[in-house]
Length: 277
Image 1 (tube, helix red, strand yellow):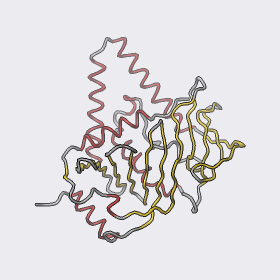
Image 2 (cartoon, one colour):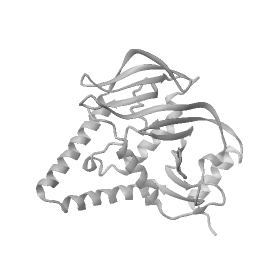
Image 3 (tube, helix red, strand yellow):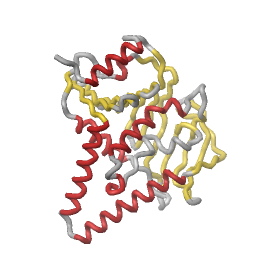
Image 4 (cartoon, one colour):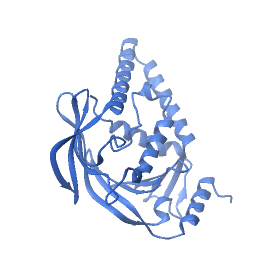
């Protein structure tokens, strides 16, 4: 039986790296909104595991493919960028149908709220600046420096950041997360303003302008209350991985359901949206 294109790409990658050959990667575990998530990062690939869940996500930033692995059912599925764009279009159609099903006044209010949310989120991404505080600390064995995040002079988040360094972590080491944000943003480009979302930020905050990696961070809403919290609980710079870390295990059954790979990621992105300034 002819192998799927995704499988051939993975096989080629395994040959390039050396089948079964171990190498080093970053292994980072964070607790966000009460859920512990582990990221295993190596070049343009990332493996994402949620504590207590059999569902594992693997993203290949070079081929722009998203794999879902179920370790209990021993199954896997893959979504390409085109699959994700199809899902984004479906999301737009669902929003339009939902809007059409409610009275005009309610529809106009919902659309206005989403547009306002999109504008604020975009402003947050474009205008956030980091100001150092006098706070310093150690989280998960890593020294970090305190910073406030400000937009229009207002504090929208506070945290403790591990300075970018070859000894700890560099921005380049997060290439896979940047590619993942690009993947989602491209997939939803046509419906972002309608849905009130902007996914350029990625899963860990405003890393492109951050002074380091967030070891501790929480958003602050306009009413002064803290929002989504993030705390580092594990940080390894030389975790051992093999090519199998970033591909579905041999012997697992492939399922043809790309939409079910992307949809939960989109929903989680919405749930973890930053507090608006």
